[in-house]
Length: 238
Length: 228
Image 1 (cartoon, chains in turn orange, purple):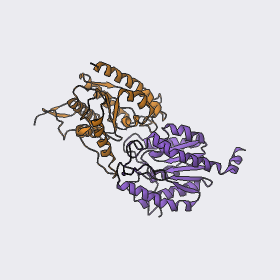
Image 2 (image 1 turned 135 degrees about the horizontal axis):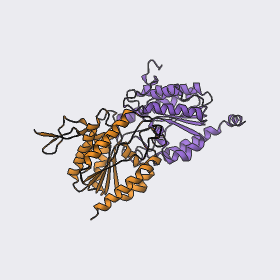
Image 3 (image 1 turned 60 degrees about the horizontal axis):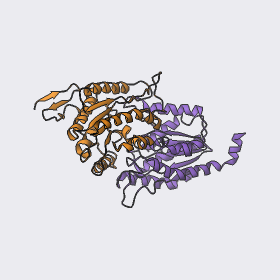
Image 4 (image 1 turned 90 degrees about the vertical axis):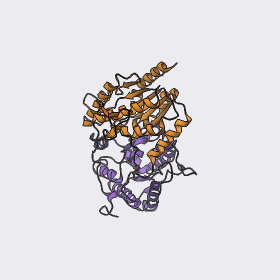
């Protein structure tokens, strides 16, 4: 089978299917229930059934940074009024989000905007692989929702002090930003309002565990996000 | 069960496999807080403790009690034990410690987890002789009945009788009411069938807060002495 090599290291067949052995970050994979309470599948099933009952204009999908957003006041104030659904799952890497979207979470809904925030949990993957994973997700969204606009959010820095994951996340952002520049149905938003202080540290007032955002940090990042979503919705209006 | 027999009672730091040293950063921050703060109440445990501080209820009910929050997501009894032995109890004399840990001890049996919690309580009593301890029971988890619910309930049962034997220690089970008659847990209470929503934290905090007020009031003589 002929495959094309994309600059992110992803292999594509002529039918647009990702070649499975090429990039683990782009191979749809459910989360294995190691702990024994089936929570990941419960969440997925709930999202699938949510997608049958609701008509969101905006769909948020991704990892814990998406999931936790739903639990704070900022969601009710800024995103509920936009008729948004939240399909975030803590711990998810790109291959998990890919599996969820391929297996029902996009069926039955036609949001105008899909907000995608994932990649920081792709441990062991290179920036190129993570970018490939994000592009694979963007591709699936476009296949299933041809009229939707995907807004990809940049990965945030993490860790109290400079470390390899900050560099990895910054590289992913640069790669993704370049990849989507030529796509009219995708745009990229840098979500970092300047979390890294002059001494290179991140404050626990912004990230209580140097990864997850406090409510006050969510306020900081969500204002521009809210504006961008609103302008995308306005453009989408008939 | 001694530490040699019980892996859940062996102190152990979290190894940084991800590469950004976050666990140690949090530990170091807590050690520093011990140098600066004079808490009357210390909360210590896993993400159930840590997340509480991000909700309004913390500011409303627990900050006013001069409470510190030393919760770290993912922590097992081993990790909490290590943190408390390595600086997180230095220079502070809280009058009440609230301990909530055990749900992440996936490698251990209910007996071992209970033993790990007992080991932490014994450490607290030895380091803080005048302290009272509240141990919060492990909550049920998962959308449907599953082995972890049974395990967590078994841990609570083991602790119920053994904790008070150690001293001014009590088990408070705040999990009642989360499991509905059909056996399910609602995502309105646990957004991922493990972690609590703001409204669920509010529900469990009311009785915890009342108990804390009681315990803090119980030693008026010590309080007068500390004000002199």
